[in-house]
Every structure is written in C-alpha cells, then in structure tokens.
Length: 371
Ligand code: PLP
Ligand code: COI
Image (cartoon, rainbow, N blue to C red; front, side, top):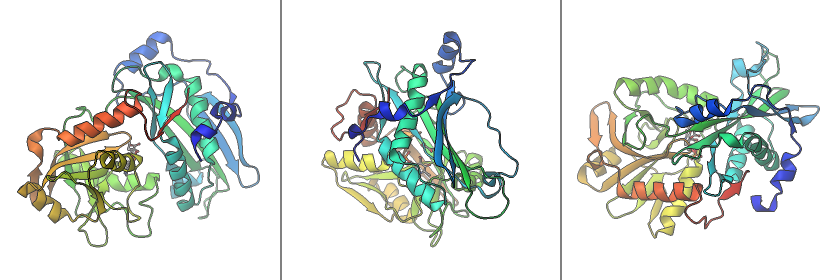
C-alpha cells in the first residue's frame, strides 16, 4: 500500500494525547539538541498501544516519556520475546518533517513479529504512531545539518507468566531521540573486527528478524572488537565460517575497481536493511552493476590486497553510509583506501542523505510526511 493513499493525520487522531506536565524548557531542549550523543537524549513524549488476546490492539495513546512499570515475571525479561525498529525523522528546508520508507519498517516489524510469535501491528497503526509522536514532539526534530530524530518503535511481551509460550499481553511503544552521527568520530573510516569464533545467527534462527536477542548475542564479540581497537564487529555465516554476513548493527558493501557494487545476499540469517535495498537501487540508477551474492572473507581480503576491491562501507539507519578503512581478524589486518573515504561511498551517502533531508529529488517516492 502506498503511504500517499493513507490519511495519516486522520489515523493519528485515534491516539489520545496526554501531554507531559514537565516538558523540557526551550533552553533545555536547545542544549540537548546541540550535540546529542547517539541514543542518550529522549523527547518529552512516547506512544503506546496495548494488545491482549481478548481485546487485540487497543488504547492508542501519546503519553509523557518515562519509566515503565513492569511485573518482574513479565515474559520479555525471561524469554526475550521482543522486537524493534529504527528509522529517522528529518527536517526539510521548509520546516516540514519526513521519514524515509517507513512502510518498509512497518513490514519488517510485521515479519519480526511473526518470527517472535508476537502480534502483528498494521502498517496503518505503525505509520499513525509515528505521526502521533512526531506531531507532539516536532520541536525536537533537529534543524542542524547531519542531525535527525531517531525513532525507535518496539514491542515486548508483558504478560506475568513464567511458562514458555507466546505472551497473552504485549505492549508497543515508540520513543524518539535526537541524534547526529552514530560513530563518535563522525564520517571517518571505521575499523571492523571480523569475529571467527562467534556467530550472530544460524539457519532457521532469528537473524532476519530485528529482535533484541540478536544484539545481545553480538555484544561479547563487540567487546572483542573494542579490545582490538575496532569500532564494529562483522560476522561470518555460522555453517561454514566462511561467508561475510553483516556487522552487529549494519549491512556491508564492497565496491570493485570496475565499479560494480557487491553485498552479501539475503540468506535468512542477515537483517534485510532498508538502507541496503535503497543503495542497491541508487547504485543501479547510476548505471552501476549491483550484485547480491555470497562473499567469502578470504576472497574479499585477496581482492582488497590486489586492488580489485577499492571501497568497503557499512550501511544502516543509524550509521547511514560509513566508510570502512580496515578489516581485521585473527591473522590479518587489511587496509582499504589508505584511510580515506571512498568516492562512491561518499557520493551515495550524499545522495541518500540529500533525498532524506529534502534537497535531492525523491524520484522513487520514498519520503512520507510525518508533520
Ligand atoms: N543489520 C543489522 C543487524 C541492523 O541492526 C541494522 C540496523 O537497523 C541493519 C542491518 C540496517 O538496517 P536498516 O538499513 O533498515 O537500518
Ligand atoms: C539502526 O540502524 O536503526 C540500528 O538498529 C542499529 C543499531 C543502533 C542497533
């Protein structure tokens, strides 16, 4: 369904608004918006929708941002029945606020819900929840170049019950956080540690779902990456420990000397990134050949060393497009591009962020107005 066919304002009116009695003052908000560190500052409100087996989705509301009351026996705390999404709201030059392909996030949340035995939230409810929150907190959408409002929809099993079965009650929330760059150093090339003793996901597991458990499983190897002086960890396939899959929170691309773009194909263990699919489109719009295939780590390292691969980058909502300057692992340390961001990497980044911020034509109809 096209979001342009939906009257999002009318859908958002289903949310009852309970305004915060302690919203940030203009001065406090301006200070928080000045240079927020990723994911540390939150807006005045949050959205909630409750679900139960008997009532379905109900009680659509916008409430003051604050702590949740959670029964210690809530299923999410024991069995990790939880999923989430990540997308951004961008300020356009005329002051309006837009998001990028939100219906794709709605669809992915539905796929994640099916895998985690959670109830599906309709695309209409998902989009309306974003409109409801962003309309209420629109002053929190940064105006500064390179900054945006990160939206984090999530859903968790709230039933107080220790039996292992799908929860009979669930909460869906959206919180929002003004953000700049995900990496502390901005758009500088990052180093990646390739984990060879740990895997993120296996066949038939939850790798293609956006669930908290996948990220919990990535933390120990992420510590290993920090110990080796790297910003992020990359994972290989669990079956053969051979093929590059993705990073802890981003997809990965390589650019060949002949101009071809390559990225690991979706095998069921990789998260299908919306940035990834947009890059495939933008690159083929430029007449580039794009290839989705299994990429062996050894082959990629050889191709970088020989100069057949000239750029490697990471991509995702939080990271946008971030150049990768080196790949390290047990027994190898390979530099890419002499520490400089690749030309195509930066051109795609500029085009993508231009579309998102309303300064490059949105020829694919990817943007949806939120406020
Ligand atoms: N892979 C993982 C594991 C992620 O957490 C993310 C971030 O959402 C991505 C890939 C990129 O997905 P997207 O481009 O939809 O943000
Ligand atoms: C995102 O890019 O939205 C992510 O989910 C990555 C990370 C912050 C978990």
